[in-house]
Image (tube, rainbow, N blue to C red):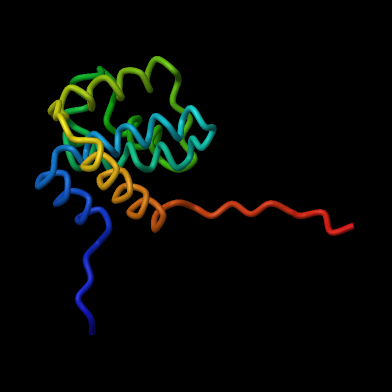
Length: 130
C-alpha cells in the first residue's frame, strides 16, 4: 500500500508551514466567488477555516453557530453576503501579511491551482455538433 495523506491534512500542514499559501488560498477563493464558481470557493474557504481558525473559533468571531458555518461552507451551502463577508474578514485576520517577489507569487499561485485542481468538481458543457 502506498503512502497517502488526506487532502485536508495536506492543506493544514502546508498552511502551517507556509503562511503565504494560506493567503493564496484566500485569494483563489475570492477570485472564484467573483468568477461565479461559488461551490469551489466555499470548499476552499472550508479547508482554509479548518487550517487556520477552526469552526468553533470562527463561530465566536462571527456570532454564527459553528453548525451553520459548516452548512454555509459546504458545496451546496448558501451563505448570505453578510455571513460571507464576516467569514472572509475573520479568516483574513488570521493570515499574516507577507511580501513576495513576483516569481515567488507565481510559484505559490501555481501550487494553489494544482492543489485545487484535485479538489475542484469538473463541469462539462454540451457542445453543439450540428
